[in-house]
Image (cartoon, rainbow, N blue to C red):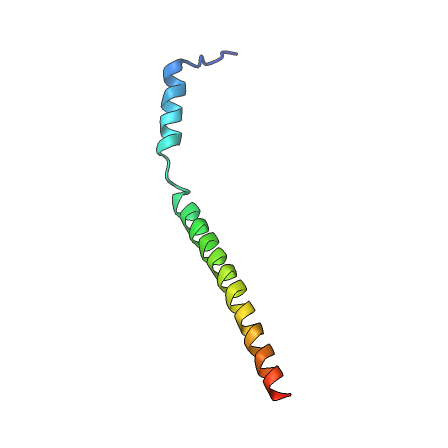
Length: 64
């Protein structure tokens, strides 16, 4: 049984191929866009939700 020797050049070539591999890049970009959009929606809902609650409370108080 022979063992293939791993040289520094082999390791560097493998790392270069791994570094230049862009196969999962699109998926990561979509995940970042979805995360950013979700955070914006949550912030908007918090702000608008509080304003809507205040408006409904004021309307209720004015009716009674």
